[in-house]
Image (cartoon, rainbow, N blue to C red; front, side):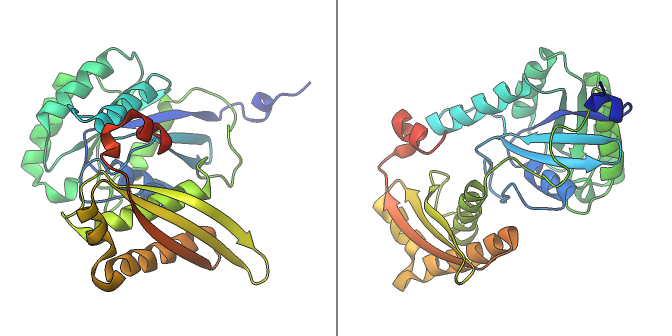
Length: 302
């Protein structure tokens, strides 16, 4: 009896955990590799809160990426949950991809990560990101330092923004994966449901349009996600949760202008994702100090 392995004798497949400090460009790197936006990005740290799975299909490999929250010395309950989630995810990976910011190192978070990764006994690959922002002498010095500090299977300087050196990075990752058949269908790029990605896209737009006024104690829940055939339309009702009344006022804006701006931008991006017209209704609700409440954290999926 033939097995899937018989049909893919040289095929490799496995899970690659993307780890790194906050704001090093992990989500941007994943989106660039996939050619699709499944993980939200922001110039602010700690944008990714959940484990996001993305699937890259190659001629002789299926690389299943798991994008994790940034690892740092967390104090708040929400951030502690996020760091615990990131570290726990790495235990289940076939390969760990450590992403560091070549332009703005974070020694405290980097040291915390390296101590954890030393215990994993997994193939470890380093991607030094944002090389387009670093002068060549400084980059060479950084490569030399990390080459001596940790026994990486490969060290690849990359730019997620420009795509530079991504083929070399994918080749290095593929070489470390175990032999095996594809684990997901050829047209799959993530296992996350559309309603989850829609909520993340709305949350991203809150960050983008409120600047520094709204902290990361913002959550989004989808109350209704319904597809209608006549006319072809997806109706989405979502709630933006903040912690204080003053934050609610910032998100809504004068005369509702800020909330409208958030909704228009989020709707456009969601429509591109699902390939259909979207009706998006947003509400803003105050959940007092939810990021410090374990029951509220569970409610919002953290």
